[in-house]
Length: 267
Image (cartoon, rainbow, N blue to C red; front, side, top):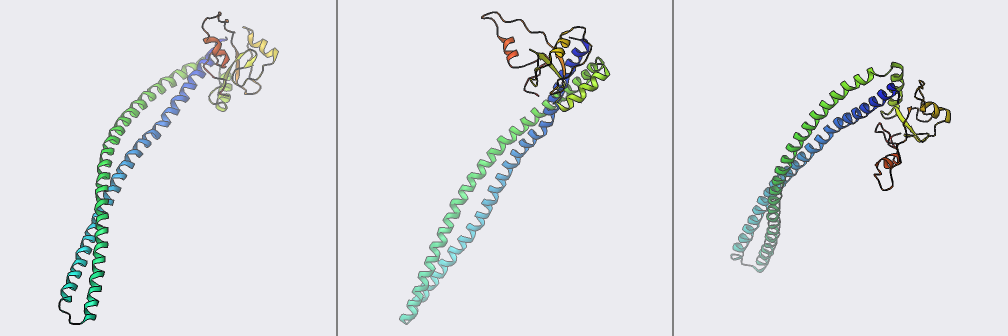
């Protein structure tokens, strides 16, 4: 392989890693936001349970007052019924007593519902408090992990950026311009290996005379794929594996992976 093409392949490897590092760094804030959202949701669940208990307790007091108020009315009507002198007045008071006792029963039912609900809200609060402890512990660990990952990624990014400048220096200026233009349109991949007379990234067949030129060690021309426009370079076929021997190289060729680490699916 020509030295300048070899340097270009190495540059592409660095660029692909840089793209991965930047994507990983961009994903970290989203991961952190998801962690914080879980903590916010847990706190909101606790606040909702406490507010529900507060409302239930308020309603309970209201219903307790209702029970006592209707019981007092029933007692008042009974006392009055002892002093009436006519059947009509007595019947009227009996009707009022019955009505008051019905209201007492209904108020007691509402009170019982609030008491049961209050116990349920108590359980919800305890569960929410326990959940918060777990979520806070998880959030703390997640923040520490994300921060450590961010530091490591930033350090590697800085190292790769420095390495990239070194690789660029070994590539002729015009060749670098072509590479940058193609890579900018092709997902950071501007160079493609040629195997079995085809571009390993888009699969298009290479013209015979171009293939022959790429195979020449003294070739100085730059050839680009007619379909994906990537800069082409020739890779010597690997020796066939012995029967029963390792099949790794055969699997690599079958999957269209070039020596620069690029996959045929990344067109």
